[in-house]
Image 1: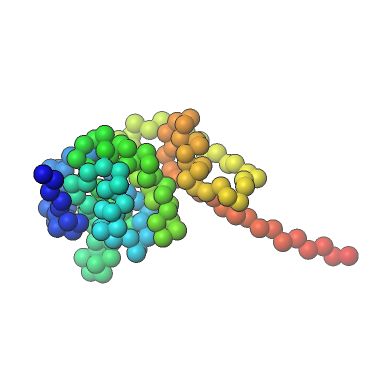
Image 2: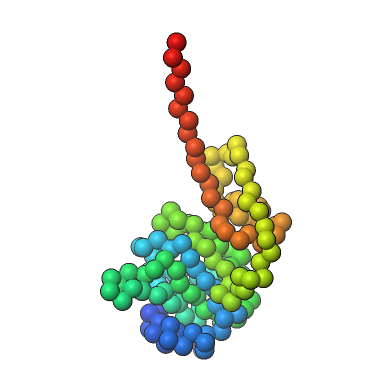
Length: 155
């Protein structure tokens, strides 16, 4: 029998007792649009595996979330799968960042920024991430910038 903990119900418990959360089975979710709710995260992430809890910290004054949250899965394998398939998915037009909550930032090797020009207009952040992640760890999300130049010539 599977018990579903509704989003928000365990939020206080999860927020106050983060040490009790299974960090290895928890995914960090960042770059969240203000419209994203715990319920929406639950519905998205449950497609990747059994979700135990969703916690999105909120500002105590405005009650608005701070652009990030945590999704705890039943197992580390479920969390790993969610990270693989949901990282850089766009919610309300913003690519969300999904990685391990327990990821040790100090273990990341020094890397480099890479500029890729002359991209097809259909190339987005998700495609870049998926393409380049095959070659190593991507520390920060790719960004696609459209630069338009308007040149005028005096005759």
